[in-house]
Image (spheres, rainbow, N blue to C red):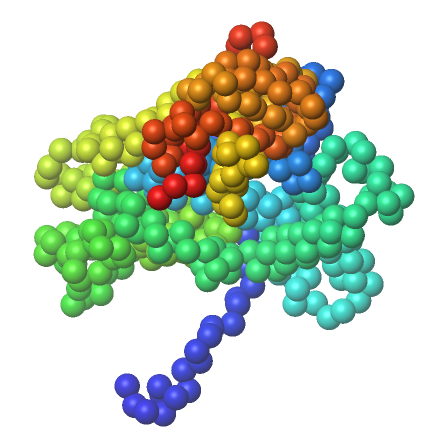
Length: 512
């Protein structure tokens, strides 16, 4: 390459507008269903109710930042339990690896939020401006009344979708009906309006304008998924050994005189088609392939690519090209499946007639490992949620000074006792000290003038989902202390006997 050519090459290729044609078929129907279900889940979930009693919110899914809680139906997550959220994220990641290793980029093609919202935006675009050819003509037409009202209507609906998207998102962080009333009357916090504005803008921009660029340039998953897939992962495949050479229906294929025979081209396992994948087997090029070169597979692609060019980074495996091709094959009386979900190994075996076609390509070591990790993480989370205590006790020893010598020679230590009631109902707890000399005195800051001896309990009432902090002072005769630090226990129990927690503490004598 000459220096002048290298200098003239742009660093960034400008976006080429795509006008996907509407597809019809089983995969398009599946995508409609998935789009409807996922959008319904997103928009309806904040309005679902779940009875947690009179002292807890009744919104089924709620991220309560003010009180630092996350509610998900019967599950309540506290800040110190964020490892549960981490476990769920691990499950999501490993689950994505599992799906990718078996079904390729099925997540990208069917359930990714970008894909779902782009489908919704394209549906609006087709409804307002027409299908592919009509949209192309409108785009090329000069600005006039027809173009103006159609574009204005389309972008207005897009903005409303973006507004609904941002509005639904903030409803996950507060009681949905109450927040909607506050938003309408402009009584909500300014952060809610900022969040809605940002999400409206991003939804409108990503779903309406950037579309495939988000998948190609912004999303890291296309690069990561190359390490997750192999020759036994299902992917959308054009069977060129069956489709080539292409020719129009009813038009005889005329082979060039010097090219009566051509090598059969097979999919390269590294991706794409080309000389690296040629077997060298000669086939008669006078036979026309099944591909009639109608171009519908490229016309329906939301990414604007042609699957006949081979495996590509931009392909999200949405399978709309399969629907388009199957429809054409049915019309021209040829077998369907020219474009189909298949593995590269299976495609190679079918092309050459050599090797065995694997009926169950997902049965292999890596899928079992992913499934095992995913299942183990899920069981661990369920076990924790089922066995966890709803009482937590933490004790902090005074550090400056650690011990105080009173006028009568006795030694006093101060402690801050924190008791966390993790139930959405008020509870009564008993607090006692064990392991010190029976003549020791214990004074609790919230019960002025009341003194207990070791083994005797204080009674503490704590509200629902509340942390209670009390000061406790213990006074001990130094003659009963044989060590610089004497271990003892602080026991907190629910008065109904359902739960108890023991904290191992140290009484400092002040001697070194």
